[in-house]
Amino acid sequence: MAITIALAGNPNCGKTTLFNALTGANQYVGNWPGVTVEKKEGKIKNKKYKKEDVTVTDLPGIYSLSPYTLEEVVSRDYVLNENPDVIVDLVDATNIERNLYLTTQLVETGVPVVIALNMCDLLAKRGIKIDVKRLSMLIGCPIVEISALKQKGLDELIDEAIKVAKQKEVKLPSEIFAKDIEAAVESVKEILPDTITEDKKRWYAVKFLENDSKVVDQIKLSGAAKAVVEDERAKLEKKHDDDMESIVTDGRYQFIQKIVGTTVKKAKEKLTTSDKIDRIVTNRILGIPIFIAVMWLVYYISVTTVGTFVTDWTNDTFVVAIQEAVGGFLTNVGASDLINGLVVDGIIGGLGAVLGFVPQMAILFLFLSILEDCGYMVRIAFVMDRVFRHFGLSGKSFIPLLISSGCGIPGIMASKTIEQDNDRRLTIMTATFIPCGAKLPVIAMMGGVIAGEVAGYQESSFIAPLMYFVGIVAVLVSAIILKKTKPFSGKPAPFVMELPQYHIPQAKTVLLHVWERLKG
Image (cartoon, rainbow, N blue to C red):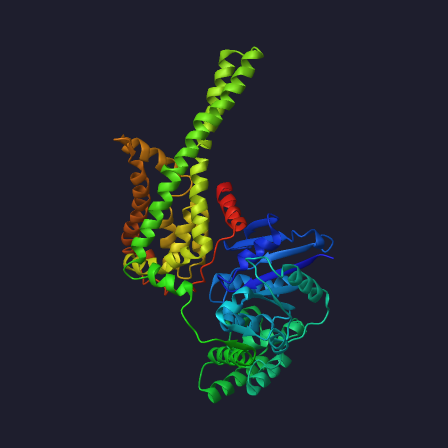
């Protein structure tokens, strides 16, 4: 029996780490149909589940199933239309109240849900105690405690997901909202067309009450049915003196606060190590100089010291050894000088010239992956937002620009998730100036040629980072120029992003990221 697991969760809750831990290298990366949001699927690597044929689909990181961002639209369309056998909802145990908002929506979709309570190993350190059994009972779905980073509890999670997927009945919630809202939901459910299956009627009823534009356009109600929806909505908005979407949102948070209040006990809050580090690296004055210093160090090591040593060894030892071996073989078999020169100097020499730059790119990608995995790169997006706004960009543009440092094409594709059209177009146009992996050999070569060696010190250690930052300056200057034109005018969108806790990068995850970038 083939089983499909949809992996859902908030951004920066450890979803990618869990996906990589479950699937290993058994992944397929593509795009969701009709959009350029990345789609990842993979088979469970544990041979224990080989007979079950379990496929995991990694949904984009989202905070809700409301249609405000492209990621949210993609995720909810998949859950509602593709009908996965079970949803594994990854919840950050250290920030459970905010994470459960998405959970309250997922349990209404009619698809069985299993909560993976992640980062449970950090609870004791922070003085947090969670009554998992009671929390599971109040939400109405099973909960498995895991640590995606340390790969603990993963077998138990998959066992529970398979068990739930094989069950025929789905228990839908009935007490998330106050009694008057629940009564309105039931009234709307009764007038929904039979084309909507019973297990999904609650979700659609809530969305009709919220006047969700995509649902209203997708499903046409009769005049009488519309009247019922509008009447129920009007009564609730008059009673609560608020719009229906806010009423539903408040109802979800009231439910979450109620269950968290009875199941979660927290010690007196104090500054964590991450908070103390953030006071320095996200400081208004120190943040950007620290970023510049970090990037200079990364390029200095990648291009000049370790990178140069490995490149020289590759060119002068490894490639030369292959040339001598192949050249000797061709001479022994009586090959002509023309063939010998073509193979040894042309083919092997040409490949060797390209291969010589691979170590530098690998070291660069290694450092960038470490910075990304430990949580520092997210901080840079936050820090750069203050700078970017002076040039007409927002912090949201930093992530596509960062991805462009590996390859410009994925960076341009990643910019499609920026909501505002003018911000998205501006990011696409400027991303091409970012030094990517293909430009790195040129930077290294030009750094050496321009600087040469002065008094035994290789000045390219400064030229290469300088060229990197010249690329960034080109981005900012072009943004200023383009912002003056009509297609790109307008204020940048507000930038809101969660800063995850710092953690020690996992070697396996980092190496996988390096391999993916080198392949590209």
